[in-house]
Length: 300
Image 1 (cartoon, rainbow, N blue to C red):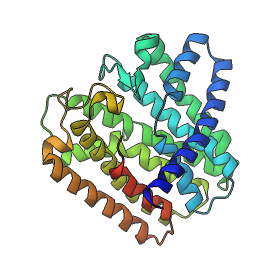
Image 2: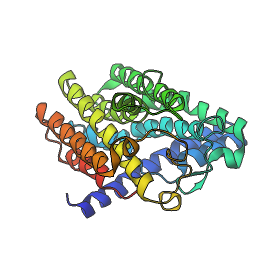
Image 3: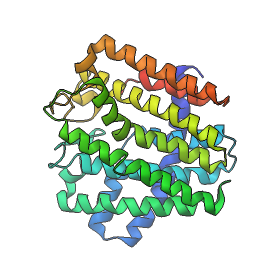
Image 4: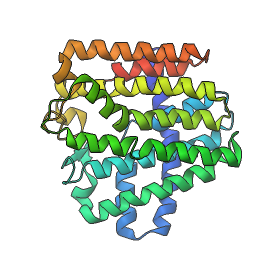
């Protein structure tokens, strides 16, 4: 795909993810109180790239999955976990952010207490979503349990939550390259990688393919964060739709560590590693290759 074709692919995929998310949120609205459900809709349905669920659905297809109507229900679970993490990450006790995806953060609208509870409710809801949707795919009921484990491990202390903790500890500190990579392989990379693993496992592939996709995911996860750091350093909060930036919070970034050109070179190396990971398992995955390159070419 050329760049315009890929952008159209992403728009089309994001729309299918949005439809699946709306169904899940509507169900939660029937189960929860009005304040919590409104906060969930605000946090989940705000504008976003939906990259993680798109990676999940793409990996599923490129690993041979054919039951497309159900894979977006599975992919929605990934975005629910991502949304919960953003709602908590923006809280005053964390990054104290007032703008996310071009709109006021959830706690700015609904208050801290409701936001904390609403975001936490998304964790068991996402797990339930995995178990109910994955069993309809090639992996079956037994595979759905493994996929739920994949999601929770990616989100937990050894993954995203652990990375968020390292991120807080790293404020006002100068991290070296190894420390910065460890932080972002967990905070950003774990859920990106988990998305790919979930999609591949849902298609019923062998462990060798899953191992290769893990290596691909780790590489694009770092590239994604480097791209974010480059955008933070070169664009305004208004154009990016978020505030504050990591630079404002005195966090180490790939730009502060390597400079603009050094960070760009590092991102290119990560993408090359991602492509090698796909080639190592002989997976014909043209869209995943194109998405790897898109990650460092995107403008927001």
